[in-house]
Image (cartoon, rainbow, N blue to C red; front, side, top):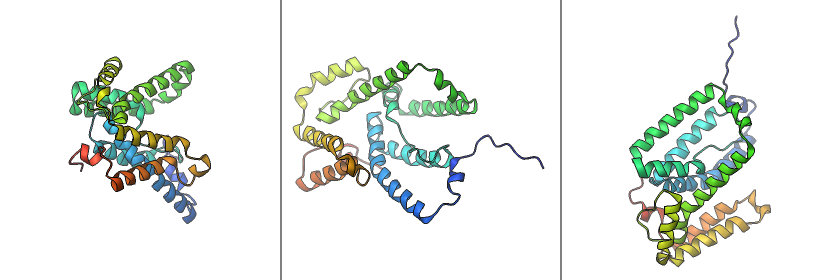
Length: 234
């Protein structure tokens, strides 16, 4: 009998061999921890991309299952990535959400073809300075998209181009809301200053999320919430 040569085999099949209840307990705790952080982060990526928060939830859940089930590694966490915020925001502003969905499907098809063609190995030929420059540039652009919400600026529409965006933000600094700035700065400080020895048990991002939400609810801090800003989330 001829043995079939299967070029692709998800790592999930190998991981489930010898899977124990202890492994499940560890994965369950890890999944809950990642989910608490990943779901709000996915909503934040969606908002920064110019779409509704539920789009980020759909992406995180569906993509998470597909990546976990079909991926080639057992340790990677799959979901939306911040690197696409700049591209998605520009397409959404210029062409609308319907055309953004079409572009997403086309991009997925291209990635599928590139994967079948084994073009991933070509990454080793890309110069390191190009990779670092790309990553640093993306970080700056993503940072610029968060200034409005971090400061609580009252701006109806922010341009997608970097220079125009910074000009509009500067012109509207007078609309800053100190409650929003204080809460955002405190959350950022907790994430950055949370002791590393505690990170494995309780990540600082979870502490900032839970404590910040509780503070707003208990003291009625006048800041926008996801529910108040995006009415009708399904």
